[in-house]
Length: 274
Image 1 (cartoon, rainbow, N blue to C red):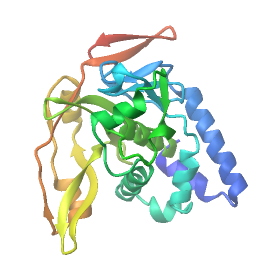
Image 2 (tube, rainbow, N blue to C red):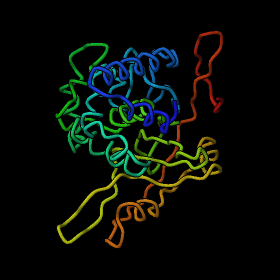
Image 3 (cartoon, rainbow, N blue to C red):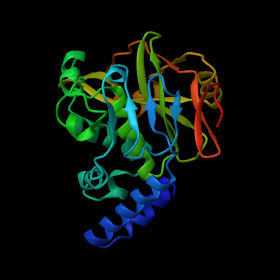
Image 4 (spheres, one colour):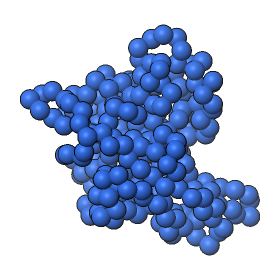
């Protein structure tokens, strides 16, 4: 199901019962089709292009030493559609508006800040193997891996061809972000849910999604280990306009570990095979 197909199907639903049935069927389909990983995240794989099932543990840089996060809040998808008042045509009319809505939904769910490692340790240090994403709700401590993982699932739910990438930002800091294809299937967009673009208006500082166009060649080179330099042109065109934009340097890399499927088992190996 593509993004357009999702919108067309959802727009035809007449009442809440039909919407709930559609959402449940969609989630069931995505879980059944999800790749059978036990864990994903920093140091485990370089990227993951499937829906993340609620049984998959997600490791961030800190949580390798504690518990892994699971995306077990299956009410998020209905909540997201309720957030836009089920108006998929009016509020999800194209990729820019969709990403903008997702950004604000993620902020509303997790909070605006990421906290610090000690605040995160307070939540993650209870000795359990897995931590529910519900335990991060509203606490202002969710970092890039948790936010990007939820974005990955929302994008998959909506029918996008998206990929959750684990690597680094500015060469030193472990980082998770999203790469997805626009509706025409040719253009790739890097989207960093953790790092919005900051710009000035007469009312003060404002924020918009951290999105950047990426060519196919740039995507291939990123997967081969090259740096990708974030460009602010797309954010300016879509959101910033004539306002002053704070163009902080951003360089993204991708880890050199990727899963491969072999007889229903998964093995880590270097290189990027699809």
